[in-house]
Image 1 (cartoon, rainbow, N blue to C red):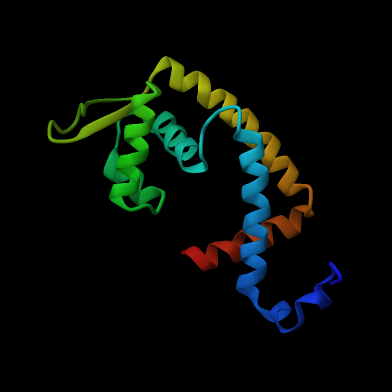
Image 2 (image 1 turned 90 degrees about the horizontal axis):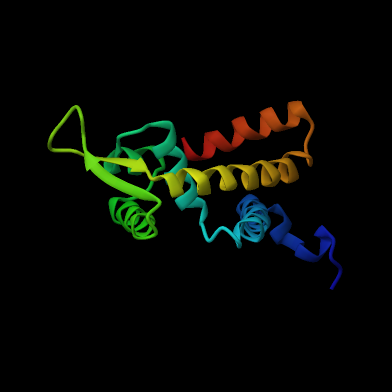
Length: 144
């Protein structure tokens, strides 16, 4: 079967299929870049947000990343077990648990951010600046 879009027949008109295939390509590239770090995209996102917002609560992480509470809890537990993240008492509300990166977590996040930079360059080089701005806005329409 030919590798061009004509091989898809009527499936070529299914937008969701193209989004899924694009997501798969991006996911594969990300996974290859992060294999040595032992981190998933969601774990990197949690570390990054905890770095940008010291003392962030687990519930705020879940809301910001559009994840359910159970998934967020599992990610936080995994990062805590690896001693990348720690729980502390919130300075503003004694009922809340605040999250903070450990020194090891900060170091690994720096490595992850460098890998993300490489991954983003790979992805963005496929588009012109105006195309990238348009694509980003169009994707936001889907999830917002």
